Image (tube, rainbow, N blue to C red; front, side, top):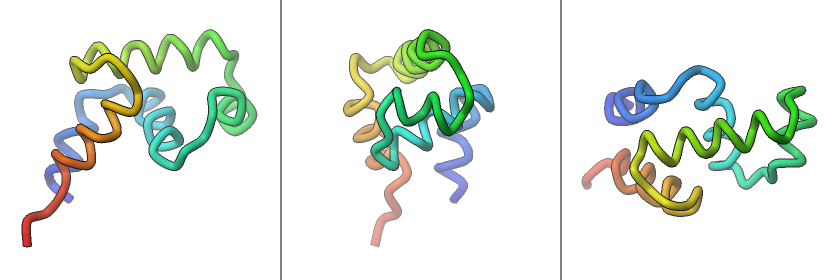
Length: 73
């Protein structure tokens, strides 16, 4: 849980919302309906997430998140 909090602390509250929905597999169009935001806003937030995590795609960001927050057995 601590690793998850540290990871998400890099992101704004809005970016965390977008990232959480991306983790759950939601599309940009679905995110618009859930978050009541414009497509351009969500795309900007996704772009910002990628920059902050220094990755080039949302899939890479999700993989990075899962690897970073994975607990060792």
